[in-house]
Length: 186
Figure 1 (cartoon, rainbow, N blue to C red):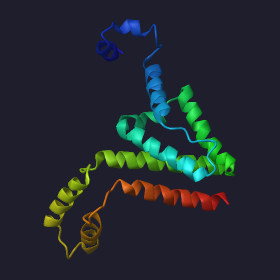
Figure 2: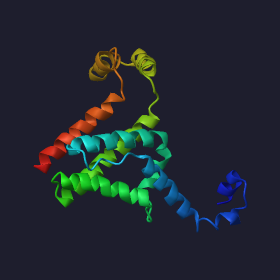
Figure 3: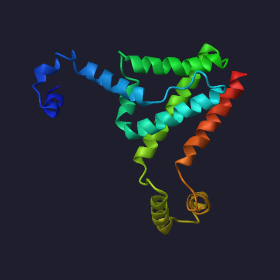
Figure 4: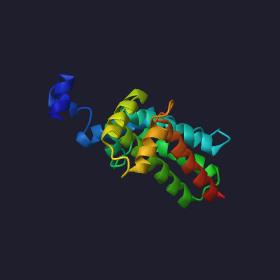
């Protein structure tokens, strides 16, 4: 609380006129992150399109706020934006015919995928296609090609191909998950 007050240029005790404690601040921060994620459209005819748009929005927001990943599911007092968000996602799935347990599985699976991808993306030593070439090229120089033929093939014939963009892997993986959920929905 002292550090927050210092950043705001006020006394720590004055913060308590606005929030009861540190947890309330963290709850509010998490709620602000959820508020920035696009809600899935209840009017969308295709549940996959609605969930896909929400997943891409969540990835974009969480990429800007990857520090929030550890906080988002840890809060005991979710705010109104958080509750609206979860209700909207569940609503799209339930209206699409998912049984309640399957909707819960779907939310868990999709959110775990988004969070994992964002975390991995944030920690990769490359951010642009040029970085991929630099990192992969450096790796190839020291790679024992005869001992690691499949990794060599992956780098040479996939990652270093013109137009390769690691970020496109997100959509591919998400589509696999949505395909599997569609098969289970029926």
